[in-house]
Amino acid sequence: MKRTNIISFRLPLIVCLLTCGLLYCFSYLIESSFEKFSIQQNVSELNSVISSIERELIYFSPNDNRDELFQNLLLILTGHHHLFVYIIDESGKVLYRTRGPNLAVALKPANLEKIITEHGTTISNLNKSSYRIAASRVIVENNKHYTTIVAVGRDLQLEFISRLRNGLGLLIAISCVLALIGSFISIYYTQKPINRLIKKIEKINLKRLNYRIPTSSVPTKYISLVRAFNKMLNRMEDVFQRQRNFTADIAHEMRTPITNLTTQTQIVLNNARSTEEYREILYSNLEEYEKMSQMISDMLFLAQADNHQLVPNLIDIDLVSMLTMMCDYFEPLTDEKNITFNLEGNCSHIQGDKLMLGRAISNILSNAIRYTPQNEVITITLSQTSEKRVKIIIANPGEKIDSRHLPHLFDRFYRVDESRHRNGNGTSGAGIGLAIVKSIIQTHKGTIFVESDDRSTRFIINLPTAISPHNH
Image (cartoon, rainbow, N blue to C red):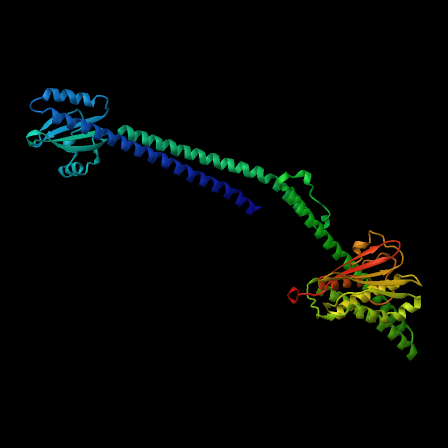
């Protein structure tokens, strides 16, 4: 939960910082645009006034038409607020000035000449006020020089820009606070259903693996997540159930031979026996040891299969020839029940491990012989389903297997009839023979499944004709 809290705080902080950054850029753009517009407006006004004054100086001589010149200058300055004018002659005498700052003092001679030469402007601060100043020199008749200095006050513009900056700063601060609060509220309501899910998930343990989160109690956008989680719980429950069943089944299977060994040993120790009796008991014990050894070997085989450690020795296999030999091998068992094999069809050769496939098919055939009634026929059908795949069907008549058992026939220690156990020899009685069959078929990149009806039970195997070595 500590990590979640860090994330919950970090996200609103990021949103707040982004909001601040965007608003700051926006406010900087507004302020810069207004300041640029103000400069252009001031420069345009200064140039316009200077041009008008120069025309008047050319038309009206300050010496001959002073009154008319001054009257025209007043008309020019009418409508211009906070505008100040200085006109001086070449000797430095002031011919005309408006009320306001002494512009001649505000500019040093070097700065004045620079402004005149470059037709530019400068900023000067006088008496706690700021001015933008422009200057120009005009030559009239008799080569007389007149210098015009015009200034416009900037105080109102600077005050407006300052207020604008403060207002935008306040707007940024308020927006950031609102963004932070809004982000926290949004995250709270977004995480609320997730927190409810977390609380439900935290209640799940080994004793409650059967619990499933109802999709009706979560928002629509989380339904797919809950369904995926429930499917994962199904798989976990199945794995734990298999593990529990495996532990119980293997304990049950090991208990029987160990109990037999213990009982026989106690009987032998209680009374003196002849050499022949000792020999019989030892043979009986040896048989139990062999069964236990076979069971352990089979379990190791399945463990290797589960960890993908089975590496088949791939060779070319003629299935028709192999199945014919296996039918001959089981002939002594089939003769006891007067059962016959019927091998039908044909298929191409395949690549595979002959020992592994022989073991898998032997397990199926031994089961078929065990559950086939007397005087019946076990049918083995071969077919070529495609250029790269073959099918083997082993069908034996007998009692129908209920459909609820079919998906579990390949589970370890699973028996259709729980009352049967350790029926016959080999691993089939222990209930792991078909699990080994499935592991071998899957190692060969094939599939196997079972069908059962009133006529027969059929094990259907699909195998590829070739296996790429890099798949193992």
